[in-house]
Length: 413
Image (cartoon, rainbow, N blue to C red; front, side, top):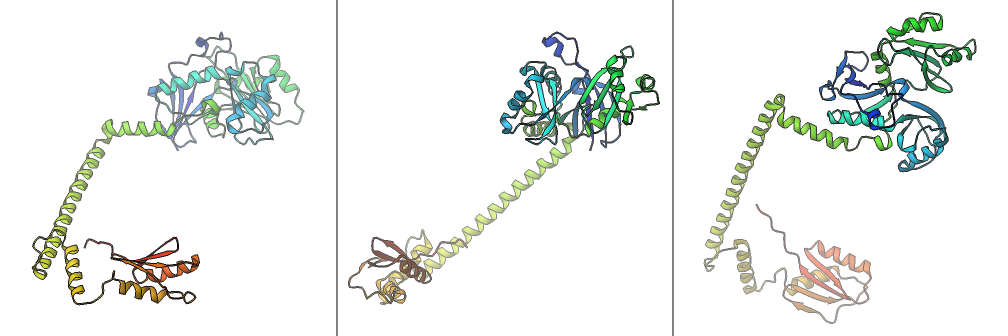
């Protein structure tokens, strides 16, 4: 996966506590890797001119992130930030509002883990500058963090005239001090003789590092070091700095690119043509279906007119034909589906043997009401189920059963 690594300038160490000390630069150093493993390109550009990649990672300089090891408090996610501040309060050198905290990627509540500490106003300024240039970060990571074993890395934060710095890590955490300081020498002398230290240095400080250690030191460029950091599991964008509505912004950016980017012109034309053809096809299909239904209605009207010549005005052929058929059947003395004879016969076929014959009933056209005093819910359910198979609906209401013939549902053919 292609990866764009952005390297902000080191935080001013002696800046006054004002917004001027937290201002972001107009341009950022960057490293581009097409496969996430090797450096493909590096340079410096304004946020809006940075290369595009599938993953964008902000890598902070070694001296810009401090670490403390604490027992992670057991607190809900919404209150974890406040709980961390309460645990770390005595060890923090800045006000609570001026620090940003982030827990280690494998942190579990109740266990000891490393917590990263960053100056919040400075980091916020970097994020705002990138966001103003339409750069959406996936992660922010430290370039030097606590890890297994003891290691040292020398580098320069500024130009060639700046003194070499030492980034150090051991079981006590990380430390960033000038290479020529007494603290650096004390770190070495305090180590047991059999301690193995993994040394690296940027090319411009490799000679200084070799003289300090007393043996050759492996050379690693800032770009290679940043790429290693981007592959680590850390993510400093937590709590109040976690990306908000990233999905909405991504959809909006893709929509704008699709609508206005010349590279998508052929796709836009093809999609528009597809929509037009689809709408045209739907209209043609609707017209054909409407014509077919109209033809069937006309044929049915003709059949009713020929079969029942006494019907002068035909407006609902199926209903009018059924009415004429019912009239002829009644004249011939044959009971219909909704007549009392048919409903009584259906009720008799499902009448429970434990109940005596009825002594009264009520019939209205299409509805037969029978008494059902003393019937259990199971008997009513069984009675209803059996009559449903005979196309007779049963409604139970306060000791009465109302039977009616179920009308067939209308279907358009």
